[in-house]
Image (cartoon, rainbow, N blue to C red):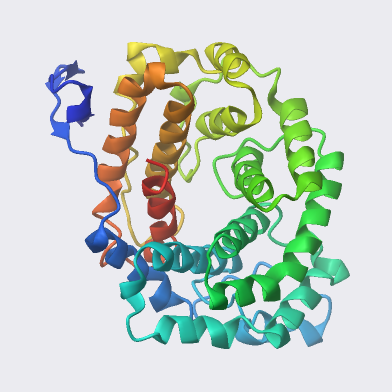
Length: 359
């Protein structure tokens, strides 16, 4: 497969493995793309089945429908996808309010995000058998949703944020406790990746001024990752990855470390980012869009782009390489999100939006 370079690389065609590359324009978030992404979570937020509950049953009393167990976050196949579905909706409504010109989506959120429903969600997280439910991936997405709500000068959004705050506070405290016990980081390319969650948590804590959580994220990021060297992208991706362990860590540390220290660290951790070889990093291929695990690889293309944009913002001296590479990854998978099988459509829009929002 040919590797595509952006026109931003100077418009020159290069050869990769003997093949001529084409140029890729940077795809940005516009009204049309926003509408395509917006339709995905608004469709699935109220779809109760299929559903992957992922909980521990303590007794027969726990055998309830998804909506009874999670009256806010029951749709979109699983809890964390529902959470970041809400995030996508809020993020897009802030920029494109005309997407909900009739107010139906706002009403849906008003009906779902209530104190009564939050009490049920909160009680589940306090159940002794499910204290680690959605740790830390789902927790991080809840923080991201709360970050979006608290920064929106909108009466409804402020009320939703107020309603969700008790659960956010509980998981903030629980995150701090967990990080103090985490001896080694989790470096997989799926939900339990430590660096990805810490990045979202950092962004939330910094914006809302949760200094206790922010300091916990900073301190533990340094403890867990500062000594890392020679992360090898050649061993990525694994077959089910939607995150790049190397790039997620590199992106996290771009937020944690001062610029000069970060550059020195990155040269040792991921030296390929400073070499022409990085231009041969090719987007991952999905062979079966109905397979819920294999379709993860489209998410990998979006999350890679998100990381590459973020690193380029901090180190502009390598942005002429990283930004075209990010553009290529987005362009490769963005065309897949409309009309997709539910195994992809219930979550991929959020990852596309995350990357497009970081350009």
